[in-house]
Length: 225
Image 1 (cartoon, rainbow, N blue to C red):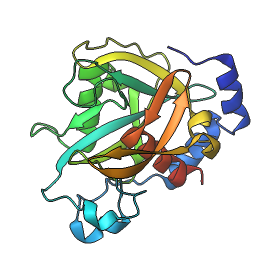
Image 2: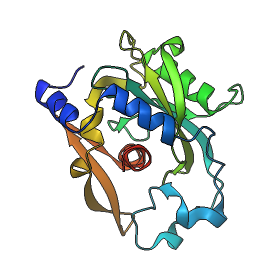
Image 3: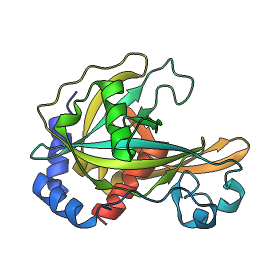
């Protein structure tokens, strides 16, 4: 699913050209994956806790599980990012917008291998059409995962076959829209008796929020800020 012409116009005006992105990504993305979660570094880490005023109270009691996601940048003249809508039947995060990704399995060689495997399993994205560019900062989710985001450039000739058990929809959002800070809203809601703060990026009927929005904000901070 492609975005509207108006959205692509905004992306172009926001400096969202492919050449500009590639120049910035080459200079600014990390070449090595972030080290695994360390409690001693908790206050400086990216994650669901990052916007909360009482961060110390959110230190995980258990060791986070290791996960990886693919941040798929489609190599169009005005690039886009491919996102998924998780199946409404899933037990966790049902119906939420997400990157393809999941837990790192013992058979995965590394974070890149895990992210590409998950993208194949969830949406049928051919790994041969993805060129890994680098890594964002690790992201600590409130559900107990240490997520490594792998940024990959995707051939625009890609095709998808969605796994209905995991994904209801896949769609593209202009990179320029997502990298414009005016589209990074801060919202709050009560969760487990505490007011929690998070980023939201509403786009054409889709509510991009939580960990996905937090990682997109990190992409902006590393590559465009």
